[in-house]
Length: 175
Image (tube, rainbow, N blue to C red; front, top):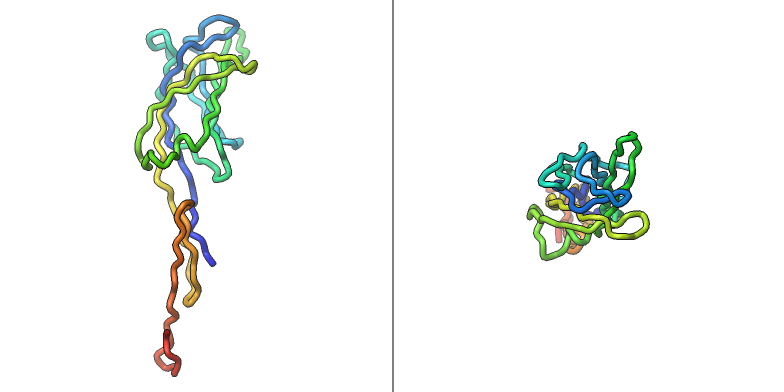
């Protein structure tokens, strides 16, 4: 039996801005960047933030391919200090199910804000971003005549019944 499977799951993420970031009790308004990843070694990194109205701003868009087994996306904010050292600001880990909820249709743009936590678990700012779930691409397996094939799109399964075609020189009846 062949199965209809999504060949990819893609989120279009735009990292917009941040609010109230601090390192050593000092506000961070520039020299910050965001690392976005979905439980994989592959990640996307924004450029250094521009200061916009006292808050770091990026407005950078990524198409993030999500492994099917991934359960969350993380937004990790880092800050480059004047000594060229990089200091972690905080991280937000967001369940992928928040983006794939049944009430949100694919291709609908969602604007979200999540609180960051520093490595001690304390609140340290907010990350603002948008996300759009791209419609999945499917690969359809080859079907063999006469074999039932189960098609699945994650939540819906359909059985496809094929009727064998009999050679016109045969005495068999197709049924």
